[in-house]
Length: 149
Image 1 (cartoon, rainbow, N blue to C red):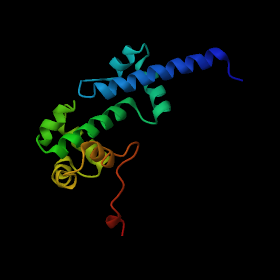
Image 2 (image 1 turned 90 degrees about the vertical axis):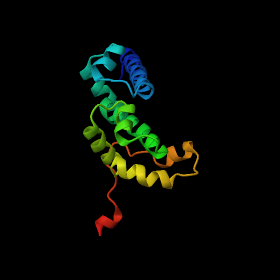
Image 3 (image 1 turned 180 degrees about the horizontal axis):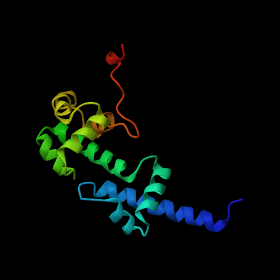
Image 4 (image 1 turned 180 degrees about the vertical axis):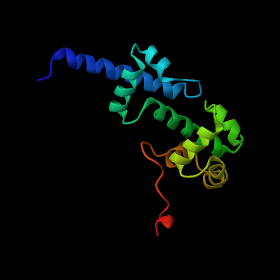
């Protein structure tokens, strides 16, 4: 049997986790770390990480990087910025880490994505292009079927 105070604490924790997630959605381009995020909602970094993973299925860092990659995809589709400029624009400080994570989530390097998607989404409203090209969460991009033969 679950006690009432435990349920209330769980709801308070979920509300704090939503605030953290909302902050990452808004401030993805800023230098955010788990310690600062946790401090902002009165939790320890370890507790925030454990609770965030339990609630959303991924670590705060993985969630933030997914947000950054989603924004990078939009910027690369527009084709106005270089891959390096996009990397820094979305809040990443390492081009190598950015490229590696981008490739894991999207299934191709940022430069290949930029070249292919600029043509593929031409004439499509950006809100539709964003939905259709959204990166995969909680797993790497699926292997190309041609490679499986």
